[in-house]
Amino acid sequence: MPTLAFKLNDHLYLRDPQHTQLGQKIIHSSMLLIDQLGFEQFTFKKLAEEIDSTEASIYRYFENKHRLLVYLIAWYWNWMEYRMEIFTSAVADPKEKLKTCLRILAEEKKYDPTFEFVNEEALHRIVIAELDKTYLTKGVDDLNKEGLFGGFKSVCGKIASLIHVINPNYPFAESLVSTVLITANQQLFFASHLPSLTSLEANESRYNRLYSFLENVVFCSIKADNKYA
Image (cartoon, rainbow, N blue to C red; front, side, top):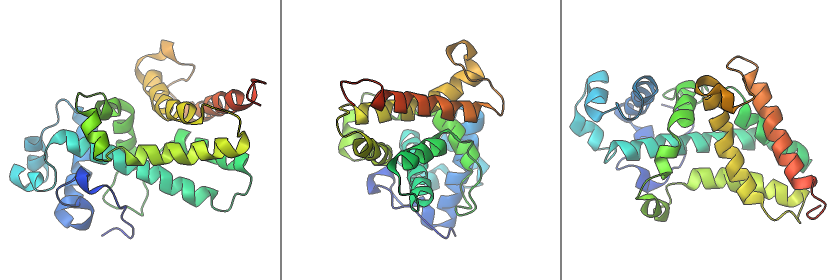
């Protein structure tokens, strides 16, 4: 069992998978399968075969595969916020806090032993490839009413609040931060698959380059225009 479990929205699941051995197995193996196959080719039947169980057992935790994907993405954003809280707790300067948050967004994601059932490397690749599938749907308004994007919104709010402190007159903090959260993953996707759309290269330097880009975008936006300074 993990030493720590996130409190995720109850509407994400039928039964919280973090608290049972089978549930953790579902989360772990679904990450590996979606990472390997892509969301379109992923099915509960394939997952059941992978974990040597039944589709019915998976449906006791998630009503469909899209809800599972939304859960995985929500878990990722909760993990991001958790890391931001840890690494900014002793930082007093709001500018340095903001830079730290941007570094956490941009850095290479590695295994976190606090959560033994989660492969954070595979999960991040899923976020990069599949994030837009969680909200670019006809049912997005209903999902939003259920609060299923709370993790993303919370991270956005945390970073935007720092911008409000740094420059209270800047009027686009939430728009800037939500754009940066999505852009951080898009740029990594472009580096691997559509390289002419990014200045990042598909090598180890891309994470440092991504951080430099995010820092440039954010700090130039909130300070460059005298109208908002």
